Image (cartoon, rainbow, N blue to C red; front, top):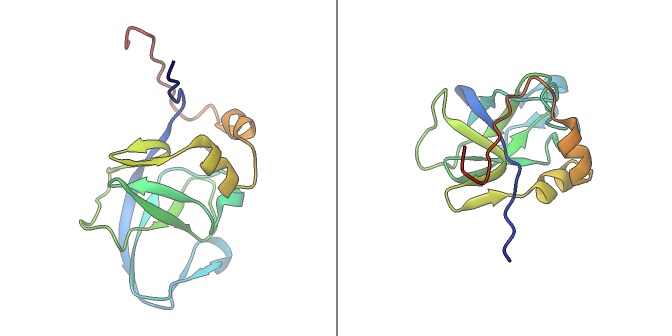
Length: 140
């Protein structure tokens, strides 16, 4: 019998911006860009259940590729580096925090480890303001 993940966590890109080398990112300026970069602001933060401990440590999937979190996770948004994507993402594009996008995947265990926590805490930390979609065995 094969098991499949029953949880995924998604957001969207709210803004894409080009920043020069040396620019600092997010609250407390905890990340300084080592090169000219394209960054995306994603529409999820610790107010949604994305742990602050993932600041400067975690990654998300954009366009089926891993993109590192830059700086501190904020209440309503998180900044990620999208410089190395083959095509520039745009506002509204989907972002996967936990789950699969194309051939790439971030597991719940991996996401939790980046925040130095356990999967159960991650699952119970997703707040009520995150929309839920439930599927049954019938696909509904």
